[in-house]
Structure formats: C-alpha cells, structure tokens
Image 1 (tube, rainbow, N blue to C red):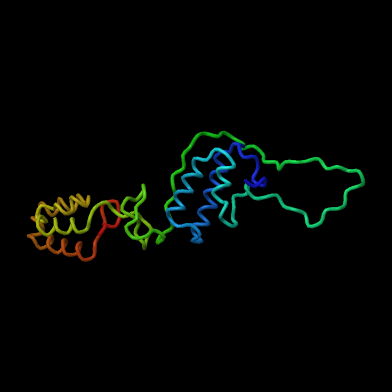
Image 2 (image 1 turned 180 degrees about the vertical axis):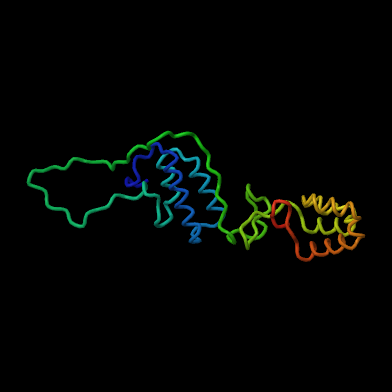
Length: 204
C-alpha cells in the first residue's frame, strides 16, 4: 500500500466510512463501477476497520477519493538545505477521529432512478424500482390483481389483494357494481397496471 495513505493498521471511524461511501457513490454515478461492484465496495466500506481496507477500495479508481486518503501535496520547489543539514524522517499526520464512535452498519443506499437493470432487486426493493419515479415496485402483481377482479370482483377480492380495503368493501356491498364496475376495474388493472395501498406501482 502507498505510504501516502497512512499506516496500514490505523483505526478509522464512522466519519471515514461515510466519506468513502460518498466517493463510491460519485464513481457509480459516473459509470466507473457497475451495480455489483458498487454494492460490494459499499458493503466493504461499511465494515472497514482500518485505513488500509478503505484505501484498497480506491486503488483502481481515479479521483475523487475520500479526503483523508488524498496524498499530501508536494511543493513545486524545495529550497536547498544548508551544508551538513540532515532532514529528519517524517510520517504523514492523520488526526484521530473525534466524537463518539458507536458501532454501526450502514445500509446500501438505493441507486439513482433508472440505474438498475430490469428485474434487479435489492434488500429495500426486492422487485426492483420503477424506472420513471425511482420508487420501489410493489410485491403485488398486476396480473394477479386483474384476474381476481375479473373473476371475483363482485366480492372485491382483487382490491383486497392490492390493499385498497375501502374500494373492496364498496364492491362487496354492491356486488361489484352489478358486475360492471369490477369488470372494468379488472381490465384497467391488466392493461394499465395500478398501485397498491402504499402507492407503489404493481409489478408486471
């Protein structure tokens, strides 16, 4: 490891982990990392304990690097030393982290809208993200909701499935609007999709 990055075993805190994750976000936004590399490096940064572990994440990346990993600036011209002067070897100074350092695991931030490939999931969005809004997709299927409305809409089953309890009860009490309301509702869901009770788009 380069000496500019400091002693290998020097401990780090949450501030250094956060700065490293911020720099990785910038590289991901500039398409220098694919989604797999990005998430793997963010997870490693979240669990890093030393400067050496964080420096390794940026070994093959250009700037930006976290500020604490930047090599010290070199003056353009060094005046000549007096005769007989022997400079003392020095080490770069890295101030220790300040403030309380609780143990904390950082969750992987969701990628920007449109950066995930179709069908790709993450712990916060197992069915992926809506490419237009960046909101996680619903765990409810529009095909299932539409079919339930077509065949059991007089009982409001499709709307119970999507979590729209108020509409479901109204369809139950009116037998699906004499069958017409539930039929049209099912066709609209199958053709245009819709949202669940949390406002998330129904997945395909």
